[in-house]
Image (cartoon, rainbow, N blue to C red; front, side, top):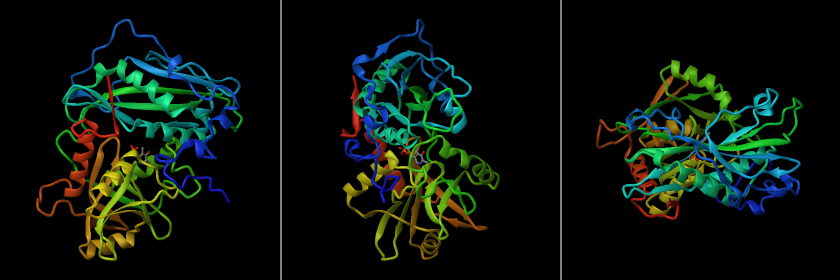
Length: 399
Ligand SMILES: *Cc1c(COP(=O)(O)O)cnc(C)c1O
């Protein structure tokens, strides 16, 4: 039986070879992408000024312009436009409001010490977005064309990207279903848009290790479901359980799956365990892409960087709570952290599970440290690449 969910990483797989994600099939022979050569730009009359950079709150301040492209099943994609930032006017029956037909991406543009603006693996975000749209029967587009159009928006808004390490401009590409009818079926119209937010460092005063609540009642994703696509609807089920975890004094949920309580993700991030495994081998382990895991760009970058270092085993596998507790008791557990675009790395100091707290080591040589040495090293390496301190094929400089 053909698997409905991706077992390969969409970050590395070729869309052209994918049965599931054929742009042409979804767009019925019409314009199967929007194109950079058709892009028009309408600028605001008076550019706005931004708050001082130390006052930027994540996702609160938006830039002057947005990118838009409309799609209909009948005519395919229309020409993309960069236009002044504006509210959307949508029919109240639009399927995005009723059946949550929506997907999004999160990426950043960074300004380096040399003043140059860079994007990090943004093609991977656009490839993943095509997987997401296709998984809810919305149209796909050409990855390179989408990268070029969003890059044009970043260029236009580059004055909004604050200087300084840790500062960036967050990019939020989004696709919504806009068909104004209530039937529960695939939408015949859609809108792709991208908005931008200048933002400050996630850890303004250095790492803050978090406590996670390993939830044995609620499930984020399941095999055959949509947990491997970046859909807004995947977040709905986490809101209330996260509130309960917060009330118990935990910042985020450690998501589990199955009777053996396998670790899947940490909050809205991918999870990593650094330990001496049951064979006595030093290993960095992250749950494999079995359909319940969102294929993070940061996850993939960490795997690439650590495999290149070649200093310990790097595994896409599986670990359950019993194994984690045993490793903790036997002193084999070194670090546990989450990974995602917003913070890069989020160190964990404690996991609450079935009424007990499992302590997670941070830095054995520094009792005041809020991160383990490996988490810190990976963080510094990725940030150095993103800000252009280390030249790398993953970054694209915007002129
Ligand atoms: C976006 C996201 C991640 C992290 O992905 P990145 O590409 O690294 O930002 C992890 N888990 C979930 C559920 C996500 O939505």
